[in-house]
Length: 233
Image (cartoon, one colour):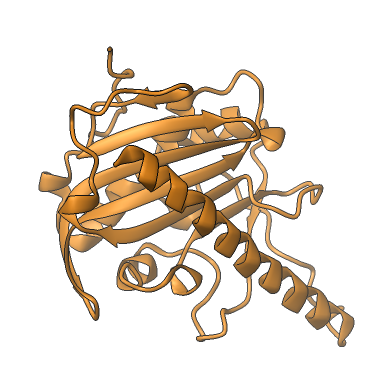
């Protein structure tokens, strides 16, 4: 089950980069059309990104990952009128939407050297049948954490992909779901060599805790304020 889930991830990333690429092209066109008054995205601190959901430990973890405390987020709107910039209420509203329509937290380094985000966080509704079982063994490059229904950081050449699934019943046009899946993609070439898997899980856990509160499922989500150490075995 875990293997098939990872296989689906790569497709999602392709769609995600396509969506961000479109946004970048639209933004560039706007600047060329009398857009000189727009000074570009505002520089934000770790306490301001992802709808100000990061607490002290996650802010420190973000700085450990990126090696800076200066970030930007996408501005402007999607084709459906939704803002690109992440907000917890909007992300909760779009849980059951297709990937291009979901509200994602895309955090860029403010130095402008990278077209792709340092952090790419996405939330989607997930059925219980898609949640990996507790007996799943860690593979190469995987680190499991004892929080939520399932939590893993999967390090591959060129990228780290963090998954955190928590219990939270939601309803959408496609029906009901028993869980929410939070995902965090981090490109290795932008990260600091001494950053850790726990840094990534700490960031994703804080944003997920805010989502659980928004959805009214904080108790059953089982997401602690402090990420525990990796699971043994």
